[in-house]
Image (cartoon, rainbow, N blue to C red):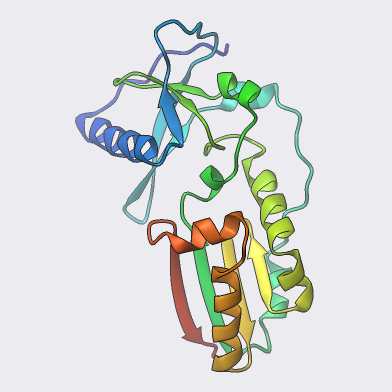
Length: 204
């Protein structure tokens, strides 16, 4: 069943949904459905919590059941950790709203319609909750940073970017390369709302 009504919501949940919807509208990641557009699929939204931070997520389980799986490999955790074993300096960067940085084809947007107590919206970027969001984003990041990964000073795990080196100077050079990469990634890195950076000396 691909046409589903909104879930019952508490007052707290409604406030969180409104906050996220307004932010996504501001960033052009979603748009309102016009009154003359035929809507065949609607997906209710959920609010998930992690460390007191909320995230808006479409309940796309029904759609995922009909979706052919993308088998693009996601790195296993031990493999990136092995590369960091000899590093003295580690810089971790987290691309916030990560999946939303990945586009979707116009003819797929009709499948990405969410509803809540406010109105019906359509995603214009890859949403959270889609089965193929992680492998699709991993592929995009691997393509953008292919050279840096092969040079052996960067690890990418979905929306986590780690720069590792033995000197502060080399680390700073790596961060500058990342920030000035003339690709879609540079648009991510220039926005203070899209990326946070942690710099620390390794204790390995």
